[in-house]
Amino acid sequence: MEGDDDDFPPEPSEPSHSQRGSVASSVTRAQDLLVYLASNSAVHLTLEGLGCMNAQELGRNVREALNIPNSAVDVFTFWFCSPLLDLQLKPKHLPYKLCRQWQDLLYRFTEAPPEAISQDEPCLLYKRNVFYPRSKELQIEDEGVLRLLYDEAKMNILEGRYPCDPEHWLTLGALSCAIELGTGLDDQALTVAIREKKLSSFLPAHAALGGGGFLSTLRGRGGRNAEMEQNLIKEYRSVCSSAATGSSLEPIALLRRYLRSCHTLPYYGCAFFMGEIDKPAQGLLHRGGRKAVSVGISLEGVYVMDVKEKHVLLGLKFSELSWDHSYPETEGDSHILWLEFDGEEAGMPVNKLLKIYSKKAELMSGLIEFCVELRSVGESAATGTDGEVTPSQEPTGRETNEKTRERRQGKMRRQSSVVCSRVYSLNTISYVDDGKEIKRLKPKRAASFFTRPAQPHTYSAVQRHSAKPSEWTDRTKITD
Image 1 (cartoon, rainbow, N blue to C red):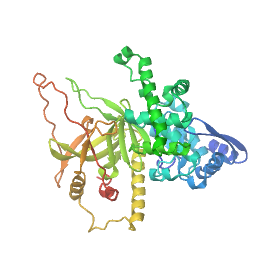
Image 2 (cartoon, one colour):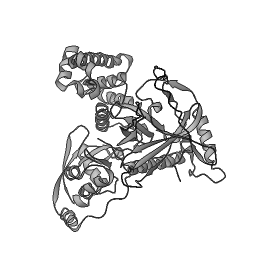
Image 3 (cartoon, rainbow, N blue to C red):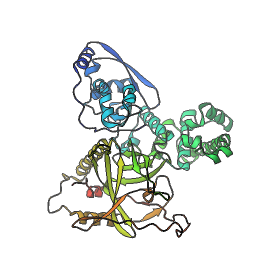
Image 4 (tube, rainbow, N blue to C red):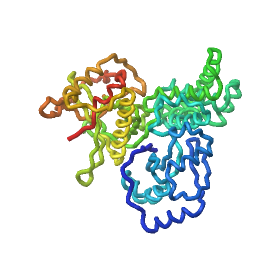
């Protein structure tokens, strides 16, 4: 399931005459509406004038039904979600009208066949706003709002949309047990409760059910589940014993602990898009192919994740990337989102280009641009400047690249976390800009099959400390 965004391009053409008639008739009568939440529950509303009601007006009715205070007006927003496409609505969008144009959006932003498009139907969800800063979440005092945020974060953890390491999702699972089952259970009562709700209600599916395969079959799923169950119970004891160190076990405190732990994941709060990238050539015939990826975009940056392996392939702050998107030039070509970032080739600094194939490239590019603008406005307000750069202050392309590389040559630490970028596994285009023309680097000739050393790759990924917030504007959108 993809999580689309927010700033999708102008709405499709006006509805037909028959559609206008349906919209007009909806003004004069009350209609039932179901608004779904991340917890799979729904808010049932009966509203008049639904056909002419925009998302902002509809939001007032939902907040009233959920007893959400007006102070949390910016925390949540409406999304249209289906197996083919997810879109975050703007306050001005008319949900009723947009729903009737759903097939037009699917043809525009998906590769789905006509049969699937004709049968697809979106649900209206009330979820976290992509543009709500995570720094404000832990300042929220209302327990109901925190619980809605918890439900959504937990869903993303369980579905593997937020990749995290075993020790991380185990702690989150234990916190979920404390939040949903209580903090006073003994081991036997907790075991019964976990088995009733199933282990997959607390741990990611790929962890609770195992990765499959021959070795997993030999070991047995039951044995793995029993081990995960015992680890979860042990971690639950650790969470509950934290009261001795001064940590509160009140529900609101546990909700904050869960969200605070999720905030350590750089892609928390992202909108997600499905796409594909090129696989590196492998085998004697140098066959490649493509790999399915999930692209997360938020106010923090852009993250490319392996859908199958549940780990990060590339994570970039906005200060570390340039981007653009391209439309198909000939029949059979793909929509492409281009990400440019600094890299290294044979010890020499180079620019790297990653191609992400997706018909949602236009949506992704628009979301990145809007996030960049929001950050620019926010930082300009914080510094008291207008954010503009005069011609005398504007750096050249070469100076920008040199400053960016100097900034990123800070302290580095090696790790094998799933959160760490795996740039070495990407099939990218490398080039250098000598100030006159862009030159693509020629790849080295592969060693002979008979002389190639039989040893594993020794490169280990590195995670760099993020740049200062004031430096994010150093990189800009790729232009011709």
